[in-house]
Length: 271
Image (cartoon, rainbow, N blue to C red; front, side, top):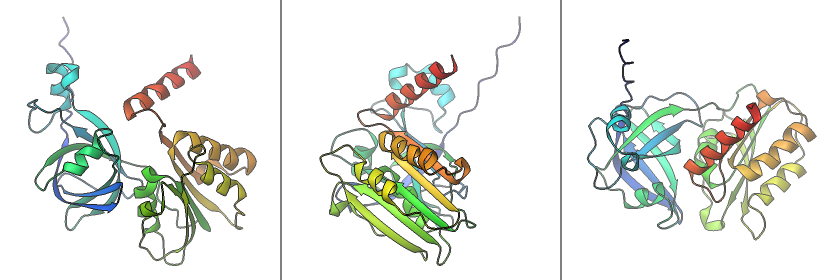
């Protein structure tokens, strides 16, 4: 009889809360310290945070291979994906911004109650986008969920690099300031009674694209990302390698539900 396949090592990385800050009424910045994180050079770098269930004792370091083999599914940590707002390699500080709407969800309430010394486990980073220095101009579009990546990208632009930034938030209180040395035009859109992202879609459709080769970033709620995708590819004919698109959440679904829906869609398309 063949020997059983060896268990995959799925040891997670460790980070510790150093401090927190509420930067807008609904955005909490958590600064973590970690000896396990390594930057990957992408401004949309992301990590998979593991939120352990209260009252359950886990192995340390957290090994998801062991957890999945020995714990019932209802005791598995909940995974949520978050963009890295900043990584300071010298200080070993990893900054992550969380949207917080009261008791809704898992990650937001965790960030609201996080205290210095709290431990969180993670995997990553992943990522795929950073502003192309050879581009003649940049377009960055997103909602609150994309603000960390947009802020990191803006602050990574070369001196004088041209960029138009379109961001939808709830209201003026949710607007943020970005650093950086680029030539950046930031336009804020406040969410109205219409469909989420309506202002962003209309703004992209009406935008007079400058001459030259652009590099475009559109991330956020899947509905408006899909509508902007049509304008960029079908109406404007942009090459796909000049556009970073990600509808990484869907209104009315948590991350688990949205990932399951996308998997089902892919399965139908390949059947």
